[in-house]
Image (tube, rainbow, N blue to C red; front, side):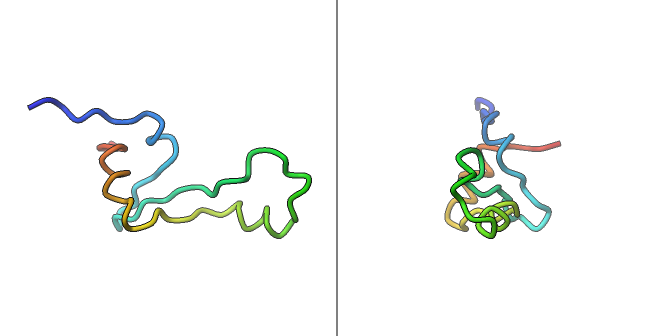
Length: 66
């Protein structure tokens, strides 16, 4: 059986925690920050978790992180 290919892009964007959750960063924090309110930018600074329905797919893409 062939090996499962991992996605380099997914490895850079997601972290699988020991609890099994997948951690991600918020979107909309890259550019055009001048028109966004300070509180909104502060909220986007923190991390978030991937929706439960997507976790299986992301874990398959990330692969085994050793």
